[in-house]
Length: 421
Image (cartoon, rainbow, N blue to C red; front, top):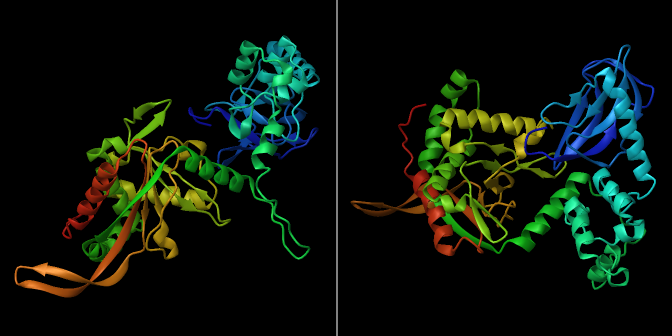
């Protein structure tokens, strides 16, 4: 699943208890953030036990199912980087004991429709004698307000009086009580948000609550780039078997600007600035279901234009066909979104946390413009576009945000129309 992935949500079982499984056949589906993946079996056998239900959150390394083979029993796990681990025969007995312990813990404190508790949290609750009611009262800091190991240990350290602790559901109801409920009529259609839609919604809301968003805009003359691409695109296709779009050209300019202004390639955490060593540019892509996903081009500043084009085309294709891997959307340090693809000339994008900047590419338009020459000014037809830069004003002031934008503009307008690839 990748080194940066710590847990996954079990979204679907593809096999039932008693089903025969072939080697390399998918057993279940998992989701990490916005990427769905299948977990295949490395062996042939029969599924004899499922240790987690759908929607459970499974940590990397935990056993999730048992497969019986002719000569052995294997444990299917969510692991990194492999997805299957095979237990030796002598380990089977110990594995069964561990399974029994986990099942015993579930009988003490349980997850419910509102909250999920990991086996680790349930185990701590059992050892410390924490009741279901007390566990429900702990404010979770994890994903979807999930209680983490840190939360439950902090609860034990502080030893709060039961009467002074308000359950999480009470706090939430008080927060939302001032919002008028939406009442639908019998003619309205009610559409359940998808899992990804809910994730995107929460991610955007959290970003607005975290960063002080400020925007800067600049207009860029891309006539040279427009004409240059028309001139070389057919030969590029014949030689590389790839279509060269404007996106890799813009990404090259942005990667260069990030080397000039490294304080936009940062993150903020606990009052400290983390200056990123690598320049990893995420490119927001729209999916057929209306949701967004942001595959990441790692070390973008080290790619030439041919390499950038191939990487952009590969990620875009796999995003559309739901073939991205968890690592493909991890570790971004700056994001670019193309609002021009929908006809918009500019936009005010929301920062992709924990980054501090995002650039929106507007539509390229043929417009009349003043052209300055040694013989005087005149009006001509030019290809122009707007760049919209949203940045976190907590750490990026208007001077740096504007200078970065100006660097991108200067790079694009100084394009060498005789450039070869």
